[in-house]
Image 1 (cartoon, protein in one colour):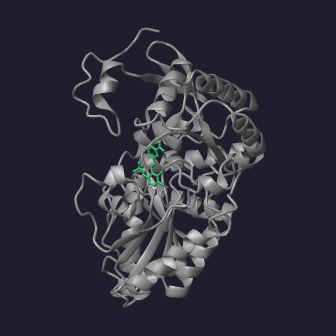
Image 2: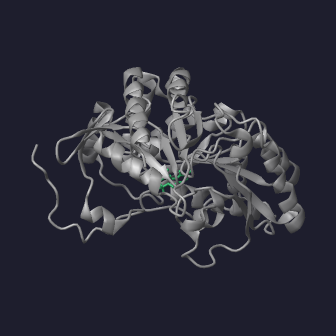
Image 3: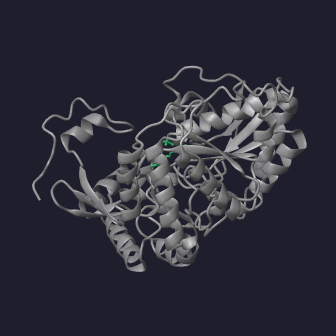
Length: 439
Ligand code: PXG
Protein backbone atom coordinates (compact mmCIF):
# COMPACT_ATOMS: atom_id res chain seq x y z
CA UNK A 1 0.00 0.00 0.00
CA UNK A 2 1.29 3.48 -0.82
CA UNK A 3 1.83 5.81 2.04
CA UNK A 4 -0.86 8.50 2.20
CA UNK A 5 0.88 10.83 4.60
CA UNK A 6 -0.28 14.44 4.41
CA UNK A 7 2.43 16.75 3.15
CA UNK A 8 2.00 19.28 5.90
CA UNK A 9 1.27 18.33 9.47
CA UNK A 10 1.38 21.86 10.86
CA UNK A 11 -2.27 22.96 10.66
CA UNK A 12 -3.74 20.27 12.88
CA UNK A 13 -3.01 21.12 16.54
CA UNK A 14 -3.31 17.64 17.96
CA UNK A 15 -5.10 16.89 21.28
CA UNK A 16 -3.18 15.46 24.25
CA UNK A 17 -0.18 14.88 22.01
CA UNK A 18 3.46 15.95 22.04
CA UNK A 19 2.92 17.79 18.75
CA UNK A 20 6.52 18.59 17.88
CA UNK A 21 7.76 15.09 18.64
CA UNK A 22 4.87 13.46 16.77
CA UNK A 23 5.30 15.58 13.66
CA UNK A 24 8.99 14.63 13.43
CA UNK A 25 8.06 10.92 13.34
CA UNK A 26 4.29 10.58 12.70
CA UNK A 27 2.35 7.44 13.51
CA UNK A 28 -0.61 7.17 11.14
CA UNK A 29 -3.47 4.73 10.84
CA UNK A 30 -5.26 4.59 7.50
CA UNK A 31 -7.64 1.66 7.97
CA UNK A 32 -9.07 -0.67 10.60
CA UNK A 33 -10.92 -3.96 10.63
CA UNK A 34 -12.10 -5.92 13.68
CA UNK A 35 -9.00 -6.29 15.94
CA UNK A 36 -6.43 -4.59 13.72
CA UNK A 37 -5.35 -1.24 12.42
CA UNK A 38 -3.34 -0.71 9.24
CA UNK A 39 -0.63 1.94 9.21
CA UNK A 40 0.18 4.22 6.28
CA UNK A 41 3.23 2.08 5.52
CA UNK A 42 1.06 -1.01 5.30
CA UNK A 43 1.78 -2.62 8.67
CA UNK A 44 -0.88 -4.39 10.72
CA UNK A 45 -1.22 -3.30 14.38
CA UNK A 46 -3.18 -5.30 16.97
CA UNK A 47 -5.57 -3.01 18.83
CA UNK A 48 -4.83 -3.51 22.53
CA UNK A 49 -6.86 -0.47 23.57
CA UNK A 50 -10.11 -0.48 21.52
CA UNK A 51 -9.03 2.86 20.08
CA UNK A 52 -9.30 5.02 23.18
CA UNK A 53 -11.37 2.53 25.22
CA UNK A 54 -14.28 2.98 22.82
CA UNK A 55 -14.41 0.45 19.96
CA UNK A 56 -15.86 -2.32 22.11
CA UNK A 57 -17.11 -4.35 19.12
CA UNK A 58 -13.88 -3.82 17.19
CA UNK A 59 -13.60 -1.97 13.91
CA UNK A 60 -15.49 -1.79 10.62
CA UNK A 61 -18.54 -3.64 11.91
CA UNK A 62 -20.97 -4.09 9.00
CA UNK A 63 -24.23 -3.25 10.80
CA UNK A 64 -22.86 -0.01 12.17
CA UNK A 65 -21.31 1.03 8.86
CA UNK A 66 -24.57 0.30 7.01
CA UNK A 67 -26.75 2.10 9.58
CA UNK A 68 -24.67 5.26 9.28
CA UNK A 69 -24.82 5.14 5.47
CA UNK A 70 -28.57 4.60 5.44
CA UNK A 71 -29.29 7.30 8.04
CA UNK A 72 -27.20 9.89 6.22
CA UNK A 73 -29.34 9.37 3.12
CA UNK A 74 -32.65 9.44 5.00
CA UNK A 75 -32.54 12.12 7.70
CA UNK A 76 -29.15 13.75 8.16
CA UNK A 77 -30.04 16.24 10.87
CA UNK A 78 -33.07 17.37 12.80
CA UNK A 79 -33.14 20.26 15.27
CA UNK A 80 -32.47 18.97 18.76
CA UNK A 81 -34.57 21.54 20.65
CA UNK A 82 -38.38 21.57 20.57
CA UNK A 83 -38.31 19.01 17.70
CA UNK A 84 -37.79 15.26 17.61
CA UNK A 85 -37.04 12.37 15.28
CA UNK A 86 -37.89 8.70 15.83
CA UNK A 87 -34.36 7.31 16.15
CA UNK A 88 -33.57 9.46 19.21
CA UNK A 89 -36.58 8.00 21.06
CA UNK A 90 -35.83 4.50 19.80
CA UNK A 91 -32.20 4.70 20.91
CA UNK A 92 -33.16 6.08 24.33
CA UNK A 93 -35.62 3.19 24.76
CA UNK A 94 -32.98 0.67 23.73
CA UNK A 95 -30.51 2.23 26.17
CA UNK A 96 -32.88 2.18 29.12
CA UNK A 97 -33.82 -1.44 28.26
CA UNK A 98 -30.24 -2.59 28.96
CA UNK A 99 -29.72 -0.25 31.94
CA UNK A 100 -29.77 -1.35 35.55
CA UNK A 101 -33.25 -1.24 37.02
CA UNK A 102 -34.54 2.24 37.80
CA UNK A 103 -32.57 4.15 35.16
CA UNK A 104 -35.50 4.95 32.92
CA UNK A 105 -34.29 8.15 31.27
CA UNK A 106 -31.29 9.23 29.27
CA UNK A 107 -30.09 12.71 28.25
CA UNK A 108 -27.96 12.87 25.09
CA UNK A 109 -24.58 14.62 24.83
CA UNK A 110 -21.70 14.26 22.36
CA UNK A 111 -18.78 13.15 24.51
CA UNK A 112 -17.73 11.97 27.93
CA UNK A 113 -16.68 15.48 28.90
CA UNK A 114 -20.10 16.84 28.07
CA UNK A 115 -21.70 13.97 29.94
CA UNK A 116 -19.74 14.82 33.09
CA UNK A 117 -20.68 18.49 32.93
CA UNK A 118 -24.31 17.60 32.17
CA UNK A 119 -24.50 15.29 35.19
CA UNK A 120 -23.02 17.94 37.48
CA UNK A 121 -25.50 20.55 36.21
CA UNK A 122 -28.37 18.10 36.66
CA UNK A 123 -27.33 17.49 40.25
CA UNK A 124 -27.20 21.20 41.08
CA UNK A 125 -30.52 21.89 39.34
CA UNK A 126 -32.18 18.87 40.98
CA UNK A 127 -31.52 20.24 44.43
CA UNK A 128 -32.65 23.68 43.38
CA UNK A 129 -35.99 22.56 41.94
CA UNK A 130 -36.62 20.74 45.22
CA UNK A 131 -35.95 23.86 47.27
CA UNK A 132 -32.45 22.91 48.45
CA UNK A 133 -30.63 25.61 46.52
CA UNK A 134 -27.93 25.75 49.20
CA UNK A 135 -26.51 22.44 47.93
CA UNK A 136 -23.90 23.88 45.59
CA UNK A 137 -20.71 21.98 46.41
CA UNK A 138 -19.37 19.22 44.17
CA UNK A 139 -16.97 16.57 45.44
CA UNK A 140 -14.55 14.69 43.20
CA UNK A 141 -11.55 12.50 43.82
CA UNK A 142 -7.82 12.65 43.24
CA UNK A 143 -6.64 10.86 40.09
CA UNK A 144 -10.13 11.06 38.61
CA UNK A 145 -10.74 11.86 34.95
CA UNK A 146 -14.08 13.35 34.00
CA UNK A 147 -13.00 14.91 30.73
CA UNK A 148 -11.64 18.32 30.01
CA UNK A 149 -14.54 20.78 30.24
CA UNK A 150 -14.63 23.16 33.18
CA UNK A 151 -16.93 21.09 35.38
CA UNK A 152 -15.26 17.76 34.75
CA UNK A 153 -11.80 19.27 35.03
CA UNK A 154 -12.70 20.94 38.34
CA UNK A 155 -13.96 17.76 39.99
CA UNK A 156 -11.22 15.79 38.22
CA UNK A 157 -8.07 14.93 40.05
CA UNK A 158 -5.17 15.08 37.61
CA UNK A 159 -2.79 17.90 38.49
CA UNK A 160 -1.30 18.10 35.02
CA UNK A 161 -4.74 18.61 33.44
CA UNK A 162 -5.65 21.38 35.90
CA UNK A 163 -2.63 23.51 36.58
CA UNK A 164 -2.75 25.65 33.41
CA UNK A 165 -6.37 26.68 33.75
CA UNK A 166 -6.82 29.05 36.63
CA UNK A 167 -9.35 28.75 39.39
CA UNK A 168 -11.94 26.50 37.77
CA UNK A 169 -15.29 25.93 39.51
CA UNK A 170 -15.62 27.21 43.05
CA UNK A 171 -16.97 25.08 45.87
CA UNK A 172 -15.23 21.89 44.78
CA UNK A 173 -13.38 19.52 47.10
CA UNK A 174 -11.72 16.14 46.58
CA UNK A 175 -11.39 12.89 48.48
CA UNK A 176 -8.19 10.92 48.13
CA UNK A 177 -7.62 8.33 45.43
CA UNK A 178 -7.69 4.62 46.22
CA UNK A 179 -4.34 3.52 44.80
CA UNK A 180 -2.37 1.77 47.53
CA UNK A 181 0.38 -0.38 46.00
CA UNK A 182 2.07 -0.92 49.35
CA UNK A 183 -0.90 -3.03 50.45
CA UNK A 184 -2.52 -4.09 47.17
CA UNK A 185 0.23 -4.71 44.57
CA UNK A 186 -0.42 -7.59 42.13
CA UNK A 187 -4.06 -7.90 43.14
CA UNK A 188 -6.37 -9.78 40.79
CA UNK A 189 -9.73 -7.98 40.68
CA UNK A 190 -10.85 -5.80 43.58
CA UNK A 191 -8.16 -5.03 46.17
CA UNK A 192 -8.72 -6.12 49.76
CA UNK A 193 -7.54 -2.91 51.36
CA UNK A 194 -8.89 0.62 51.18
CA UNK A 195 -12.66 0.67 51.82
CA UNK A 196 -11.85 3.19 54.55
CA UNK A 197 -10.68 5.74 51.97
CA UNK A 198 -14.40 6.42 51.44
CA UNK A 199 -14.61 7.77 54.99
CA UNK A 200 -12.82 10.90 53.82
CA UNK A 201 -16.19 11.91 52.49
CA UNK A 202 -17.48 12.10 56.07
CA UNK A 203 -14.54 14.35 56.95
CA UNK A 204 -15.38 16.65 54.04
CA UNK A 205 -19.05 16.64 55.06
CA UNK A 206 -18.08 17.75 58.54
CA UNK A 207 -15.85 20.49 57.16
CA UNK A 208 -18.37 22.02 54.76
CA UNK A 209 -21.63 20.92 56.38
CA UNK A 210 -23.28 18.16 54.36
CA UNK A 211 -26.33 20.29 53.59
CA UNK A 212 -24.14 22.38 51.24
CA UNK A 213 -23.04 19.39 49.14
CA UNK A 214 -24.93 18.60 45.93
CA UNK A 215 -23.10 15.57 44.59
CA UNK A 216 -20.10 13.28 44.68
CA UNK A 217 -18.73 12.08 41.35
CA UNK A 218 -16.40 9.11 40.91
CA UNK A 219 -15.43 6.65 38.23
CA UNK A 220 -16.46 3.29 39.67
CA UNK A 221 -13.15 2.09 38.19
CA UNK A 222 -10.69 4.81 37.17
CA UNK A 223 -9.40 3.89 33.74
CA UNK A 224 -7.34 6.66 32.27
CA UNK A 225 -5.30 7.40 35.40
CA UNK A 226 -3.90 3.92 35.42
CA UNK A 227 -6.66 1.40 36.14
CA UNK A 228 -7.48 2.03 39.79
CA UNK A 229 -9.93 -0.65 40.83
CA UNK A 230 -12.24 0.11 43.78
CA UNK A 231 -11.26 -1.71 46.97
CA UNK A 232 -13.84 -4.17 48.28
CA UNK A 233 -16.58 -2.31 50.14
CA UNK A 234 -15.43 1.13 49.00
CA UNK A 235 -18.30 2.01 46.64
CA UNK A 236 -20.82 0.68 49.15
CA UNK A 237 -19.44 3.02 51.79
CA UNK A 238 -19.58 6.02 49.46
CA UNK A 239 -23.22 5.18 48.73
CA UNK A 240 -24.05 4.90 52.42
CA UNK A 241 -22.46 8.25 53.29
CA UNK A 242 -24.25 9.97 50.39
CA UNK A 243 -27.57 8.49 51.51
CA UNK A 244 -27.03 9.57 55.07
CA UNK A 245 -26.55 13.20 54.02
CA UNK A 246 -28.92 13.52 51.04
CA UNK A 247 -26.02 13.87 48.60
CA UNK A 248 -26.36 12.59 45.03
CA UNK A 249 -23.86 9.97 43.86
CA UNK A 250 -22.74 10.18 40.22
CA UNK A 251 -20.81 7.39 38.54
CA UNK A 252 -18.75 8.22 35.48
CA UNK A 253 -19.15 5.11 33.32
CA UNK A 254 -17.58 6.55 30.18
CA UNK A 255 -15.02 3.73 30.21
CA UNK A 256 -16.82 1.06 32.25
CA UNK A 257 -20.11 1.28 30.33
CA UNK A 258 -21.07 -1.17 27.57
CA UNK A 259 -19.45 -4.37 28.70
CA UNK A 260 -15.88 -3.47 29.60
CA UNK A 261 -16.07 -5.16 33.03
CA UNK A 262 -18.13 -8.15 31.90
CA UNK A 263 -21.52 -6.66 32.75
CA UNK A 264 -23.38 -4.04 30.73
CA UNK A 265 -22.42 -1.37 33.29
CA UNK A 266 -20.25 -1.07 36.40
CA UNK A 267 -23.48 -0.49 38.30
CA UNK A 268 -24.38 -4.11 37.51
CA UNK A 269 -20.86 -5.36 38.14
CA UNK A 270 -20.35 -3.79 41.56
CA UNK A 271 -24.01 -3.89 42.64
CA UNK A 272 -23.94 -0.29 43.86
CA UNK A 273 -26.44 2.17 42.41
CA UNK A 274 -25.66 5.83 41.89
CA UNK A 275 -28.38 8.43 41.24
CA UNK A 276 -26.99 9.35 37.81
CA UNK A 277 -24.34 7.86 35.61
CA UNK A 278 -22.54 9.08 32.52
CA UNK A 279 -21.69 7.16 29.35
CA UNK A 280 -19.99 7.83 25.99
CA UNK A 281 -17.31 5.90 24.04
CA UNK A 282 -18.80 2.38 23.63
CA UNK A 283 -22.28 3.90 23.25
CA UNK A 284 -21.70 4.10 19.47
CA UNK A 285 -18.66 1.80 19.39
CA UNK A 286 -16.64 5.03 19.19
CA UNK A 287 -17.69 5.48 15.57
CA UNK A 288 -19.79 8.63 15.88
CA UNK A 289 -19.24 11.04 18.79
CA UNK A 290 -21.96 10.61 21.39
CA UNK A 291 -22.46 10.55 25.13
CA UNK A 292 -25.29 10.44 27.57
CA UNK A 293 -26.40 10.68 31.18
CA UNK A 294 -28.65 8.01 32.63
CA UNK A 295 -30.91 9.23 35.41
CA UNK A 296 -33.19 7.58 37.89
CA UNK A 297 -36.90 8.43 37.94
CA UNK A 298 -36.34 10.35 41.17
CA UNK A 299 -34.09 12.85 39.40
CA UNK A 300 -36.07 13.12 36.17
CA UNK A 301 -39.46 13.45 37.84
CA UNK A 302 -38.31 16.24 40.13
CA UNK A 303 -37.88 18.43 37.06
CA UNK A 304 -41.33 17.64 35.62
CA UNK A 305 -43.20 20.25 37.62
CA UNK A 306 -44.25 23.82 36.90
CA UNK A 307 -46.10 25.08 33.82
CA UNK A 308 -45.99 22.54 30.98
CA UNK A 309 -45.02 25.04 28.29
CA UNK A 310 -41.75 25.88 30.06
CA UNK A 311 -38.43 24.15 29.39
CA UNK A 312 -37.70 22.04 32.49
CA UNK A 313 -33.90 21.86 32.19
CA UNK A 314 -32.09 24.71 30.45
CA UNK A 315 -29.37 22.55 28.96
CA UNK A 316 -28.61 20.66 25.75
CA UNK A 317 -26.44 20.62 22.65
CA UNK A 318 -27.04 21.23 18.94
CA UNK A 319 -26.08 17.60 18.39
CA UNK A 320 -27.93 16.02 21.36
CA UNK A 321 -29.49 12.91 19.84
CA UNK A 322 -28.05 13.53 16.37
CA UNK A 323 -29.75 11.13 13.91
CA UNK A 324 -26.53 9.61 12.58
CA UNK A 325 -25.19 9.09 16.09
CA UNK A 326 -28.48 7.46 17.14
CA UNK A 327 -28.47 5.19 14.09
CA UNK A 328 -24.89 4.17 14.87
CA UNK A 329 -25.87 3.63 18.51
CA UNK A 330 -28.83 1.40 17.70
CA UNK A 331 -26.68 -0.69 15.33
CA UNK A 332 -24.00 -0.85 18.03
CA UNK A 333 -26.48 -2.23 20.57
CA UNK A 334 -27.68 -4.75 17.94
CA UNK A 335 -24.08 -5.87 17.39
CA UNK A 336 -23.44 -6.12 21.13
CA UNK A 337 -26.64 -8.19 21.57
CA UNK A 338 -26.03 -10.51 18.61
CA UNK A 339 -22.51 -11.31 19.75
CA UNK A 340 -23.11 -11.28 23.51
CA UNK A 341 -20.48 -8.58 23.90
CA UNK A 342 -21.93 -6.89 26.99
CA UNK A 343 -21.04 -9.98 29.02
CA UNK A 344 -18.24 -11.52 26.95
CA UNK A 345 -15.53 -9.90 29.07
CA UNK A 346 -16.73 -11.99 32.01
CA UNK A 347 -16.07 -15.20 30.06
CA UNK A 348 -12.64 -14.10 28.92
CA UNK A 349 -11.59 -12.43 32.18
CA UNK A 350 -9.90 -15.49 33.80
CA UNK A 351 -7.83 -16.19 30.67
CA UNK A 352 -7.00 -12.51 30.31
CA UNK A 353 -6.05 -12.26 33.98
CA UNK A 354 -3.66 -15.23 33.84
CA UNK A 355 -2.02 -13.98 30.66
CA UNK A 356 -1.59 -10.47 32.11
CA UNK A 357 -0.17 -11.64 35.44
CA UNK A 358 2.34 -13.85 33.62
CA UNK A 359 4.26 -10.58 33.05
CA UNK A 360 5.12 -10.48 36.78
CA UNK A 361 8.87 -10.69 37.26
CA UNK A 362 9.77 -8.98 33.98
CA UNK A 363 12.12 -5.98 34.22
CA UNK A 364 10.77 -2.85 35.95
CA UNK A 365 7.29 -4.31 36.61
CA UNK A 366 6.18 -3.11 40.08
CA UNK A 367 2.45 -3.83 39.93
CA UNK A 368 -0.11 -5.59 37.74
CA UNK A 369 -3.88 -5.18 38.15
CA UNK A 370 -6.95 -6.22 36.21
CA UNK A 371 -10.71 -6.35 36.01
CA UNK A 372 -12.95 -7.51 33.15
CA UNK A 373 -11.06 -6.92 29.90
CA UNK A 374 -8.83 -4.28 31.43
CA UNK A 375 -5.25 -4.63 32.53
CA UNK A 376 -2.52 -2.38 33.85
CA UNK A 377 1.20 -2.94 34.14
CA UNK A 378 2.89 -0.37 36.34
CA UNK A 379 6.60 0.19 35.71
CA UNK A 380 9.21 1.68 37.95
CA UNK A 381 10.01 5.15 36.60
CA UNK A 382 13.46 6.04 35.31
CA UNK A 383 14.82 8.23 38.13
CA UNK A 384 14.14 11.88 37.33
CA UNK A 385 12.34 11.03 34.08
CA UNK A 386 8.78 9.97 34.87
CA UNK A 387 6.65 8.69 31.94
CA UNK A 388 9.69 8.05 29.74
CA UNK A 389 10.00 4.31 30.29
CA UNK A 390 6.35 3.52 29.57
CA UNK A 391 6.27 5.84 26.57
CA UNK A 392 9.33 4.09 25.10
CA UNK A 393 7.43 0.82 25.52
CA UNK A 394 4.49 2.36 23.66
CA UNK A 395 6.77 3.33 20.74
CA UNK A 396 8.50 -0.05 20.72
CA UNK A 397 5.16 -1.92 20.83
CA UNK A 398 3.80 0.18 17.96
CA UNK A 399 6.86 -0.69 15.85
CA UNK A 400 6.24 -4.33 16.71
CA UNK A 401 2.57 -4.22 15.67
CA UNK A 402 0.80 -3.69 18.99
CA UNK A 403 -1.19 -0.65 20.18
CA UNK A 404 -1.06 0.01 23.93
CA UNK A 405 -1.83 3.16 26.01
CA UNK A 406 0.35 4.68 28.67
CA UNK A 407 -0.39 7.08 31.47
CA UNK A 408 2.54 8.10 33.59
CA UNK A 409 4.61 4.92 33.80
CA UNK A 410 1.55 2.69 33.65
CA UNK A 411 0.67 0.64 30.57
CA UNK A 412 -3.11 0.30 30.21
CA UNK A 413 -4.77 -2.39 28.10
CA UNK A 414 -8.44 -2.53 27.06
CA UNK A 415 -8.87 -4.46 23.80
CA UNK A 416 -12.09 -4.73 21.81
CA UNK A 417 -14.44 -7.19 23.51
CA UNK A 418 -14.34 -9.43 20.40
CA UNK A 419 -10.71 -10.41 21.09
CA UNK A 420 -9.93 -14.14 20.61
CA UNK A 421 -7.73 -16.13 23.00
CA UNK A 422 -5.06 -16.42 20.31
CA UNK A 423 -5.02 -12.62 20.09
CA UNK A 424 -4.70 -12.35 23.87
CA UNK A 425 -1.64 -14.62 23.57
CA UNK A 426 -0.26 -12.49 20.75
CA UNK A 427 -0.82 -9.28 22.75
CA UNK A 428 0.97 -10.49 25.87
CA UNK A 429 3.66 -12.28 23.85
CA UNK A 430 4.56 -9.02 22.16
CA UNK A 431 4.27 -7.01 25.37
CA UNK A 432 6.58 -9.41 27.22
CA UNK A 433 9.24 -8.91 24.53
CA UNK A 434 8.76 -5.13 24.73
CA UNK A 435 9.27 -5.21 28.50
CA UNK A 436 12.37 -7.41 28.17
CA UNK A 437 13.85 -4.88 25.74
CA UNK A 438 12.88 -1.83 27.85
CA UNK A 439 15.75 0.27 29.14
N1 PXG B 1 -14.92 10.37 31.84
C1 PXG B 1 -14.11 9.31 31.83
C2 PXG B 1 -14.16 8.34 32.96
C3 PXG B 1 -13.21 9.12 30.78
O1 PXG B 1 -12.38 8.08 30.80
C4 PXG B 1 -14.06 11.14 29.78
C5 PXG B 1 -14.91 11.27 30.85
C6 PXG B 1 -14.07 12.18 28.71
O2 PXG B 1 -14.59 11.70 27.53
P1 PXG B 1 -14.36 12.48 26.15
O3 PXG B 1 -15.29 11.77 25.22
O4 PXG B 1 -14.78 13.89 26.37
O5 PXG B 1 -12.90 12.35 25.81
C7 PXG B 1 -13.19 10.05 29.73
C8 PXG B 1 -12.24 9.92 28.57
C9 PXG B 1 -6.83 7.06 28.02
C10 PXG B 1 -7.93 7.98 27.58
O6 PXG B 1 -5.92 6.84 27.27
C11 PXG B 1 -9.08 8.05 28.31
C12 PXG B 1 -10.10 8.92 27.93
C13 PXG B 1 -9.95 9.70 26.79
C14 PXG B 1 -8.78 9.60 26.06
C15 PXG B 1 -7.76 8.74 26.43
O7 PXG B 1 -6.88 6.50 29.11
N2 PXG B 1 -11.21 8.97 28.72
